[in-house]
Image (cartoon, rainbow over all chains, first blue to last red; front, top):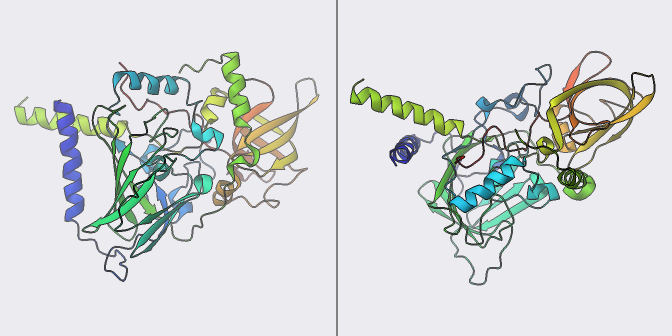
Length: 268
Length: 147
């Protein structure tokens, strides 16, 4: 309990520090609100162009030790241990122990939210008008076109990325998402959810180069309490969002099926 | 240790713990499931085919085995959009007939199949063709506490 409290305090202190910053250099739209438009890289903390920011990470760069693991210093997602109910935690762990062989994205299905925001290998383009914000994700070439200042429709059928509506709270764009199916992962390996998932995302452009991102995940069917995840998105000037047609030559499911049949040792 | 020092130490430790739970969301699926980071391999041979395809690209390489027989290796890597950002130019950087050396990790299924990481060209220059070992396999710790 005390651990949770301290974690919460660390998170809260950091959020307050962010709010207190004078957001110098933040572009604003005609409505005076921060303009989030641009091409961004999720889970990154390094400013600069794509090539500079990813040098040595395996995304770009040459001449580094090829056997080195990815550098955690350049990218991070801050979270507490995911508060799954015991039965659900066992299911997450099983997926982890099988090294994510059941990843829905391996079938070229849309990754979930906020997972799409946390992906760092592929850029995200944001286009914004006073009435609408559009997120275009290179990974799987999916998009979210979100009205600002409207309510959820009454007749939502469950989908991979859910139904999103946005509103401004001061300089923070708050996106409320419901209407998910249960076929995606929230973040890392095995982080499943139910159709009762309710997500609240908060995007705060704190400088020209950086958006602070926070997602609060509520799902009483599988979680014991709301789960909060924070990360940053960094502006990548000069980067273009490209095509990604996942179904083109996806040979992995056949390999993974064979591995399951042959009982390959996935233990770490 | 005073209460205050103890509290500060606890807070510091917990801050580290929170960051340690950070999950690198590289999200390039399945490399860690399909390939074994305990089986690194370096192969040198002649490029016979390159598939610039999604979700992953492939290099095919004729490599002489110990008995001098040609074995065609299949090396998986990044999709074209990531290769482009990594510095690759399709049909320019590497062509069929080029001799290259590839550092990779072998498939758990065995055979001449591997997950490529770095390609070294004839002039000694290098480029990454695939992600680090273990990509997409859940990382060093699961999202939940292990009971």
